[in-house]
Length: 359
Image (tube, rainbow, N blue to C red; front, top):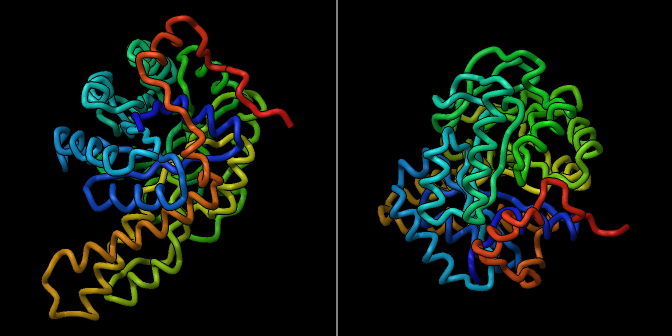
């Protein structure tokens, strides 16, 4: 099956009331684990690569790996997404290498560390949307900065993010600004700030409304009922994988992620894309540690990598099932990007299409 744009995939998800996990990918093992889980669940999937992943694996390797995954899993619609693009060039080179969707994160300046202002964010995001839509690719924007409502600080991950104190208003996306931003930029999806952050150490306790502001989703969805909302930093950091990690020599301190049931609640309020990275990293490395300690004589990398792939696939299957993604892959007829480009050009793909299913 051909690659799918983020816009088409999230339109389908909105019509059928489900969410789509977006898994970060750096290597073959992650790709195979994610797609094996998707195939087992008949689920469409978003594979996203950060600038760090592109630097680690290289654009050519990533492009060829995506081609291989397409060929191996022809029944699965695959959206290939640039995560946290920092400028126009990052986004455009991603599209040149076969990405069907890009995120222009104008919430930070080009250095990916300095918070920007609204005018900068809207202008650069609108320019990326204009260029990407010309070739049928989708665009995700971000309004607000990822960071902790507990500490009032941001945290960098994989070379991206502000480290230091943030104004409280920057940690929560304003619904009025969100409406203005979507209309001014023409983005296909909007990532919002609600207290989540990258990495494993999101919350020092089970998150409640004071540190995980799910009400922000509800208020933005009420204002923009047909805009696809994105939750970043949404790994759940499963307790069972923390235990495996620490039992076999790890030193992860007590931490909480975003509870799956809260994400499911968010899906009911308009969340369509859910970013997950730490959960797969944790499951994979926990298995590395388990093999290293229980089989100290083992030196074949495959004996470490295969269990790690199984662990990652188990996490992916659980998310596909919980988010309602399972069972939808076969129902999607992929629209080629050239046809999506014509729809953008004709104005038939505006920011507020009537995509919600009838009650």
